[in-house]
Image 1: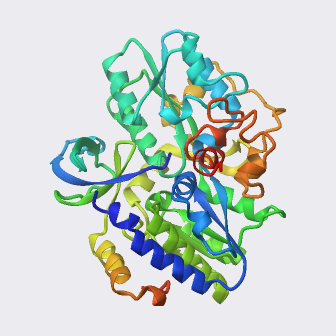
Image 2: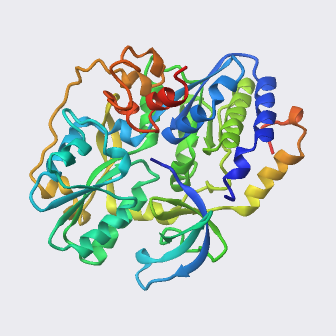
Length: 83
Length: 361
């Protein structure tokens, strides 16, 4: 029910009414129109987390890369919970 | 797909499993809150891969599962009203009310349509002004902003043939109810990542401090879940009880301010009945003035009736984590996904259905 999928913003479709702002968002090979009024600072190229047709968060690319890098570099036997 | 596949990597999972094993010296019981997490844990076989002392129990975070059957009856009654088209997420279609489901009602002539988004229902109302479009607004804090947005769009565009039947529920009051229950067995929580993208971390800090229980905000992929478990176990072993954020890439410190502002404009907090758990104070959202003119429960003369469950379904205990789905006497016998008795067997995110599909052997 709370399923939400990250997709890449291809094109913004601004609207004079803030609650009707949309963007074309790509999920793998599929592009869908998504409402972006709850992430007003969104830019083309951002990844957004989309739930029931509405973007609810902008992916923090820096944090995502840091988390993965930490896991990549750490010796498995030495993984601790504190990156 | 970026930001998903990296978190399904086997080598990373193996490393985290080793780390969990190394960190665990005592038995700990962890509860994941969200049904999406339950589904992912069971589908990926994670409970069986964890070292023996770590036990997972499954929380009440499936909105489909906790919607009271009487509210489903109300949705069905609305769908039989002349001129009404009831729109719903697909998950709600097969959930039994006190007698039948929306799907059965549709086969009997009720007007029911599945939609992917509440905004689709608004568009439908705009395109068919002769019909009264009612959206069955089910969901936790993740979905509440999208449903509020639908109401706001209808309001701003003067779409008066749109309304919602609200069944919104809130996670923290349910966690409090679980923790107050003397039979509660939970040592630590994996909090629902997508709920926190909206609400942020603050509310959980209070819970963690009040009940001295670690809470780790956790994502949905196997690597996310295993890292969430590791962080929680490490806290328990150290004897700390803070809120940690495993799902940092999606959950920002203060959540989504624009979404919360919209929710505050549109909703008020109300007491709500949860299927299997009973009435929990201040655990739901309802539309407030002037948006209550979009409240289908007020617009149509269809009242929710009281309900007593005689089926023998143990969904309440399953949703509290005090009974494993397979320990229910109905599991896999009279209650299956084809013929569900309790809601956790209907929704793919329900603990019973997850066990039936992925863990039945």
